[in-house]
Amino acid sequence: MITENKGKLIVISGPSGVGKSTLLRRLFQEYPDKMSFSVSYTSRNPRNGEIHGKDYYFTDTETFRKKIESNDFLEWACVHDNYYGTGKAEVEEILLSGRHCILDIDVQGADSVRNTDIPATFLFIAPESIDILKERLEKRGTESDEAISKRLKNAVGEIAQKDKYDRVIINKDLDNAYRELKEYIFE
Ligand code: 5GP
Image (cartoon, rainbow, N blue to C red; front, side, top):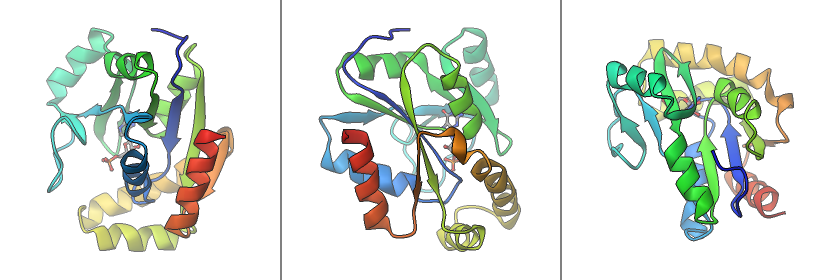
């Protein structure tokens, strides 16, 4: 894996429903030439509207396991009972192009990236409170009640690890959070 490049590897974590995707969408719209999202692989089913190759590469569990065996992942983790992984080739291609490479990965994946020799910066997007996160997940309506409970339980564990990150941004107000995110990336 390359370690010298012009682009930065930027790892973003935060609980499900905190608004990471919305913030990142804005970032890619404003800076299409400066940064790219590394599309992850997952064994979870696509949600309504999600596009294979854009949101994720949706694979079955067996294909995912084969990719683990072939050492295709920079990191991978089991999150909310599904596999998720970052392809080495995807990250390499983005960094070699000179663009910043953004990873939206969970806290376990961030730990794995910390254990590689690739320089990276780590950002955590936190909700104002667990109650507000619950409201957002319910409003989003993409998960069953059971899945929401699981995601909220995981959120508590994830938030407990926020101090491992270089910067924590609280997404209380989307515009402010977006400004902070931009400032941090371009500082
Ligand atoms: P969702 O199912 O809501 O898209 O994502 C669930 C969680 O999996 C999120 O916390 C997201 O950051 C994380 N995730 C997405 N892709 C990856 C990946 O490639 N690796 C790891 N470790 N986590 C991921």
